[in-house]
Length: 352
Image 1 (cartoon, rainbow, N blue to C red):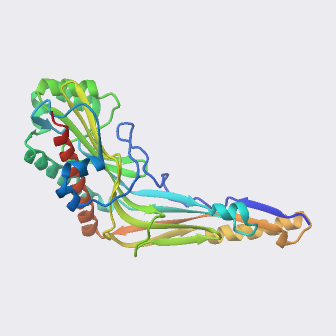
Image 2 (spheres, rainbow, N blue to C red; image 1 turned 90 degrees about the vertical axis):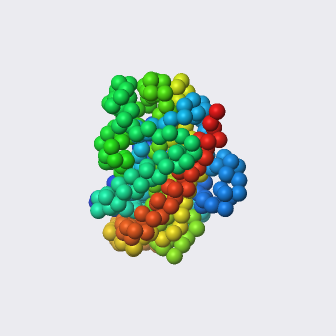
Image 3 (tube, one colour; image 1 turned 180 degrees about the vertical axis):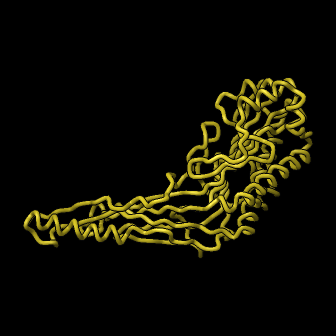
């Protein structure tokens, strides 16, 4: 007797879900980010051989940094990821198993609400900015405030107007971008010419850091806070985790040379920051009911029994991560502290 195998796309999307991905996308072509080669920062290795350790973590592209002994920072931004999603399917079951649910697909949408925590995130950005300036000073550079540069040099004011986005908060794909108080973020692919003019007129390096902060991952090693769900043969797991994505780094321009330092690896920390992870939606019951209805209809239409009709479906879950604000702030700032050190040390290595 002929058998029937169907996959139905049922109730996959839940109301209120934003679009996004399990890996970082790009807030603009200027700041590409990715989530790759996750690794924990080692203070011991950093202290024992800073030069070797920094080169293990970072890539420097373009010219040297030390045309001038002065540096100014017109843009300082951090993108906080607030939504990620992924769908999983058991590939082996899909290929070799002929049973109900063998080809099921299960999606998971994870949100980290940022609106209630905007002030906290702004504090993180401002703290990181102030700390990086201090680190540059300790490295022997004179840090000139951008407001001073902008007030003195016409090219600087034009650079801000033409190449920077000055909105303190900007929605991004799966996240939100905040800038340090009074500063902007780079918002143009063609910024080099203007930055060169500023650098030469003011006789200082123009630096513009941008970081992307993640809040968790799918798959991988589980922790005590990991949640795992299944739908037939399909299963998916999410673990909250603070991350500074690879691709984060700093654009610079000194005289006629543009340069960029970026992380090759994603800096991660499994220090718990989540108060709880709350399920906000689940379409599996609807998907299963629809599968049963489809099985009965196909069997009746083809004058066969339900056993000869194998149905798989697609379902989705929504979760919201509720953070412990103090723990989140401490964890993010600790990771940013390590990344700031990497950038400053790489800057020192590349100095002429």
